[in-house]
Image: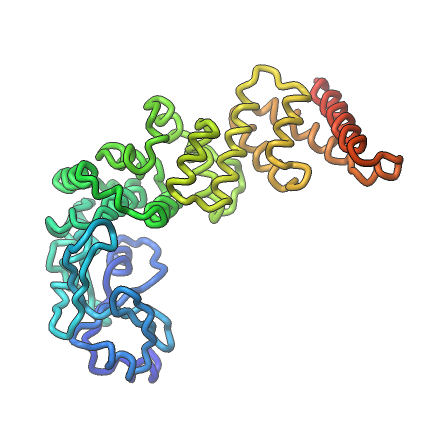
Amino acid sequence: MSGWRDRCLDGLAVYRVGGAVRDARLGWPTVDTDWVVVGSTPEEMQRRGFRPVGRDFPVFLHPETHEEYALARTERKSGHGYTGFEVHASPDVTLEEDLARRDLTINAMAETPEGQLVDPYGGLADLQAKMLRHVSPAFVEDPLRVLRTARFLARYARLGFAIAEETRALMRELAASGELSHLVAERVWTETEKALGEPEPAVYFRSLHDCGALPVLMPELVEDEAEFERALARLDSLPRGLPDEQRPRWRWARLVEHLDEDGQAALAERLRLPRIYRDLGRQAALTRQLRRQATPDADDVKEWLDGIDAWRRSERVQPLIALLALDAPALAAALARAWQAASRIEAKTLVAEGFRGGELGAELARRRCAILDTELARP
């Protein structure tokens, strides 16, 4: 620890909290470290060089490490949804009171900078028992906790974790209360996108469905129970070689590929989906339609290539062919060969031959279709 950091923290009651404490004891990788400061004020934190960043409650960035330091606080329900709370942060708020407002016992542990554990709500015991359990009945005051609990299960399910039955009951209570409808789309999507990056994303959606939350938040996914189950089974059936950062968007595409255009549009609007997720979901649906045809011909393939905007966005083609190869390897191989040949025909070649305007587009389409027809007919 540097001398500057020593001076910043000297005399403060500081505790590491939350995920860093939990994951260190699980042997899970930790990325960010959050801290709680007990007995201080915003003015004192700024005098020590910390930069305020919290809009709804006092959070500060360390001037050297840029880690977050939040003043100990309590919360009281005052409205609907995730933001409907009155926050009280003052020097008289204790560490135990701050930890009491957290969602799960495994997230309500703290430790001193020297590593001494502070665990007033039995988080370590639940960690060892592999149990996700709420800290207090105040769990039902924040509907976002339904999604967070499901996301933590998606992360730790492979380790044998389960949700405590009494916590599941509170999740069902929240789903039935109407509080979920007050969550803003951005918060729902943030948790969902994180879940799509967890080891067991299907667990997230199944947990939300089991407690009655999914029909409220994403009803299009569960209109057909059989299709929903098949969609969950597809979540880890992805094109090979994807970078880790692309896996969430491809998992989402596989989840929604069975939905028709109206269903995808409604879901995208409800969740305020980023365009990259909307586009890939639609491309996966078009690929699914092609795969489900008995013997796609050149017109079918050209329609698919046009639909995914392949001629302008050629980088889209190979991953979607790799997706097709998971269920239809022979068709994928023929399509890869046909695409390689057809993509060599360029508009500038036809312009040099004298084609212009509408004739240019028609001739380009004719030649591409002819090449596709030839290549698809090859054994």
